[in-house]
Amino acid sequence: MSGDAGGPPVGRGWCVDCERYVGDAMAVAYAQGNSGPGKVLEACIAHAREYAALWFAPQWLKDDIAALDTAGTAPDADPRDPA
Ligand SMILES: [Zn+2]
Image (spheres, rainbow, N blue to C red):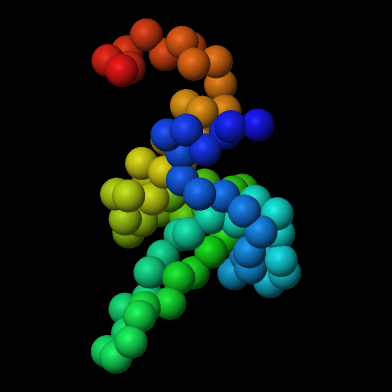
């Protein structure tokens, strides 16, 4: 399966909503730290969709979900896509 073409990296990680490890976790937020690298918050795709639908969701998250939807359907399913 080469499902990562155009989509965000999805893999095993901790879903902050499920509060357990899931096999389809993706980044939903980056917590900025004053020192050192920031913390990445992950959620399963189902919860990531919910985050992406919120008004305060970052644009990159909306883009990631859109890319997932594009990758998850037929490549030529959307004629509006100029690519
Ligand atoms: Zn979840």
